[in-house]
Length: 187
Image 1 (tube, rainbow, N blue to C red):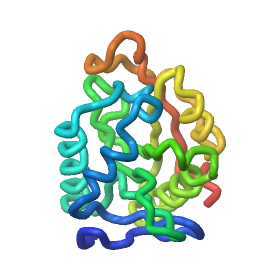
Image 2 (cartoon, rainbow, N blue to C red; image 1 turned 30 degrees about the vertical axis):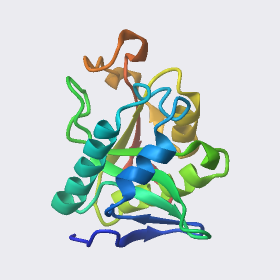
Image 3 (cartoon, rainbow, N blue to C red; image 1 turned 90 degrees about the vertical axis):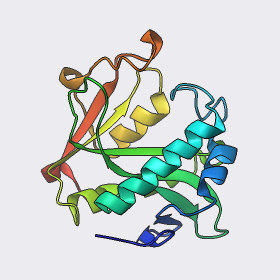
Image 4 (tube, rainbow, N blue to C red; image 1 turned 45 degrees about the vertical axis):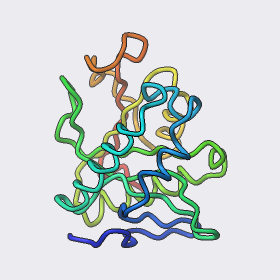
């Protein structure tokens, strides 16, 4: 599935999940690279790191046909962050190679149901066109908002799959794993 830069991949009632395009790395850095958003993601990063992340997400959409897509609000075309599916690739990960759902939204978009709406659409893509048999989600113990969404989506905690990621400090380990099997998806 090849799609063009900026092309809409998924549309929901309030959101557009679309491919990355020129200028999105700047919006990503401006809206998502602050202490609150990055609290459980390694802290505020340099603009170079954000440019590298955007380039990697763009490469995945070109190579695989899916990625953590840009989440844009329909009402005003505001850049809200990202949500989508990638292939898990953590160091020493117990879930390497599995489809992984992830999201990161700007702080002023929190608490409005956008993450759940986008994540539900991404799961529908994973279990539909992608044909995934299971999808995992990764977080850390302190990130209650993230694992709370995982539970609301119907994902199951898989403590037996938790792992230590050597790239992260001790305070952010272990990486904790949630999972949803295809037959558990109620989309």
